[in-house]
Image (tube, rainbow, N blue to C red; front, side, top):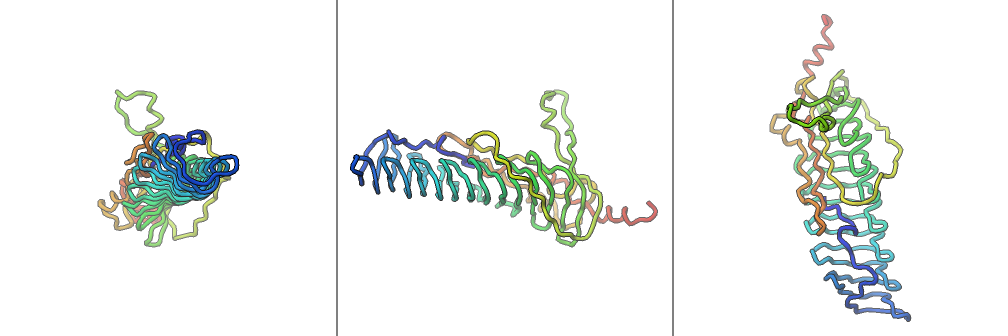
Length: 313
């Protein structure tokens, strides 16, 4: 996503005079409504107060980006819309030149994120919608990544549980539209690796694997939300999450639903880093949630159910 703040798309400061046409106060400062063409080629039209952009205004960057919204002492503050050079845009609240509060981000691949922001990052409760598949992640975000209680909703089933470091972790359940649930948990397992691969990459090889335990009727799910903590580190380029998360339950049970291989593939969220960030204004294109476990197949509850109900076992 085009995750650029004023640190990447630098607006001209108060000492960059340029050309100005508009109101001034008795001290000769820009004050009231005015238009300015700045030395770097950017333009601003809107309100000033004591020589600084303050109130409603439109700032146009020479690279095509623009901000339309509120300012406070030369900084984006209040409600505003930032349109990036790649066509992605953010509409929502700003504080001290950063996305902060509630807002909606529209990605170039038509994905959207709607929810809370803190210090320029997705943080708090939010929903990420995948335009290509129709799936969506609804839940907690920490420092721009999926973490905490959440629900991953697909076309005919959903996964409910917790996420950690962008991956599903611990107990959870799959809820199917046919009227039943498969309970289990995600455990970290090591991928098979070639001998030539470096030992230091071993940690990155751990992937979550679904282990089914039982099948029940539908029950109401109430997530337990963690206490919100401010994100660590400062603002800057926001990396797209690359969670290897849940889709269909893995091999422990075979498909209950009629999802074909083609449908299963369609559940894989689209790539969202198509608009790589540059200092001229591209943010990372949408999230890149690759839920690889989606393609492990819909585990059959029928086999699982038979095993549970067979008194001979």
